[in-house]
Image (cartoon, rainbow, N blue to C red; front, side, top):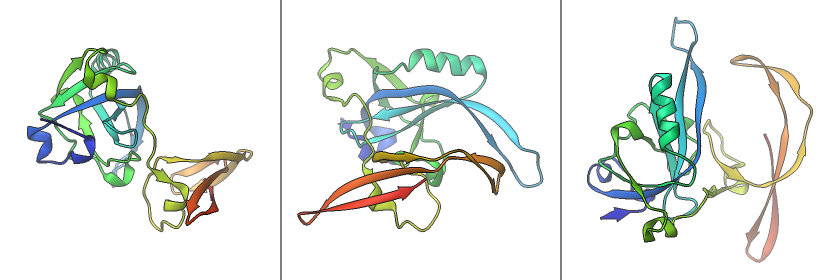
Length: 194
């Protein structure tokens, strides 16, 4: 039985299969800090896994030594389709920090990943890219901390400015995005500053 990624949860991950297309694979660097410890640095492989609908996507990840990350990058190339089964979800991932529409991270090295031929019917029906399901007007009044993938039209880009943040001094660039959303037959302009 194969399901769309929107049905992915702790129970379905163990028994169902999911067809996904790999998008935006990369080895990324990150840093984190724990109480009373110096800042730590690391790297991991990350990609976007797109299900049966363009807004049905989550993150795939591999942690480990540089060689393991390079192997993951060679295996999970852009555009390839995999059938995922016996999925291992990352128990340490925090939905607040995942910007994908489906707030889950799949540990690809602990999941059965079977390559699907490009001519296969399952591969042909999957979208080529992820398309964020959130629109600016849906999140502009959000009062909290979360990451979102959004879609909008770039209106302007400001000059870099040095600002003090909780993480120290950072170069910040203000970006203005516009979203035109249909609301009851009228057109409403949504604007967000990032």
